[in-house]
Length: 279
Image (cartoon, rainbow, N blue to C red; front, side, top):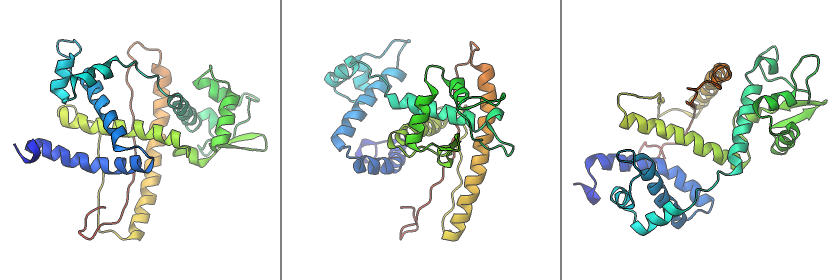
């Protein structure tokens, strides 16, 4: 055994975990989430993940088995497992619905202008031209389009110009409302992390997880590269979105339509420290 009882494999993993957790810990401190709160959260997650992924003979693991797997005290395991599952926060469905509507607005031919950009929409269809109400109803018929419009106006996702509803450019990236951003932080980072974990644990079934890294670049060069990445990344996402909408409409009622995907594009830049390493 090595330092602190870790194996060499565990030490390599611990080093990676420390790196990936640093920006998360910064965010938690900034938003007032204490170590005690985070500790209790992680304890519950250890139990939940062990309960979900480490069954034997298709039977849920016992409290004793979870104790062996996680080191969490049996008393805590029993309390955590007995807690009723909390209903998913309303923001989850709200953010997901927003994403679906924006995705259709920016990809379906009936909502695009001649340049292939999301066109301005009237509230209702006119002369066989689909309007905002039809767009919302194509995603969810249980929510009144006016409710969505009022909320989007509040969040600055859209604005009104000459009786037309115009999609703001900021809607293509993310909503500035913190709850919306937190929602996408969890879902985007979960899937990115899950892809990486899959590639470690399932060597025969690797998923796409690639990046380009360079250091010792000037600020001017980084600015140019950032512009290129933004343009090409957006082209890729828009292209895939248009294809996925077609597949979704064709597949959604099929018995085997039980798969989901997420492709993300990210960019990060920072100064090197005195040792020539990223801060």
